[in-house]
Image (cartoon, each protein chain N blue to C red):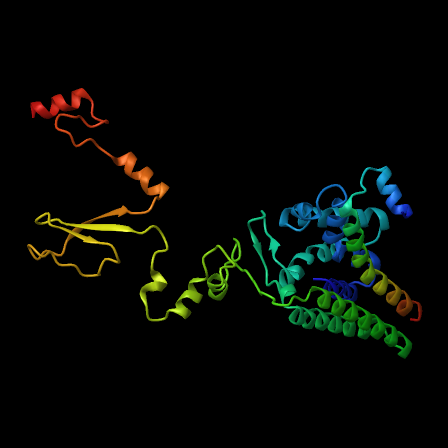
Length: 296
Length: 46
């Protein structure tokens, strides 16, 4: 969020007029300023881990409030802390923001929809300016300054959104803790390696089994009848109801044999493999165990 | 080369990304300046 942070600062200012405006605005942009300053030493995106993720955000808010109290020696440290902490919820609307680690990023990502972002942030600026004007601007000249401030901020936001506008914007909001999962249309275009939303798959194939089909390894499925030992083989999906041709039983034991290399299955098969030659003992069988069996 | 860049170079910080950081700092400064000036004018006239 860009101009929207000012809206937060103006709203906080109306709550406690004793807090100077400049520190309040600085606090509302605090994580961004800190990220910029730290970015002179290391990559700015890397520094975001210490400024915009929740632990760093809370530490920064505490430090900023303490610094304010020490430097200004005025009440209002809570407002500074609130302004700093509200940076995260504000950014949640416009980008993907981290929770605890880089893999946990959530947000509505309205920067990818510049028109919606402009509507949101300019509305916030106008609303907070009205609130500020009603609280502090009593004369016409004062109201004119408030209106000029709001116009400048909205203009700045418009410039920023115009600069961020893309030819083919892809809106990718994410409310899960992991990476964003694309819509089906993006997957079909081949522009995303990850699986689509389940809801998108269901929407595209409402009356088929594809929605629940496995995307995993293909192979041969063997059904062994528990009654007579008759085997049935399936290379496609196994039907829901299978009847043994020989005895009419419906109870089978299922074995999957992959026809494509799959490391997990190969590893499992190797781990479970046993010698079938006559006289070979099981690898886990001790001589004493065989003696016990012979005795019984 | 301006004074800020010369100072950054002396400190060993002058690289390509300093230009981006300066741009970002400029972007962050604009709302601060606008609000501070407007607030100063409003409160001075109270």
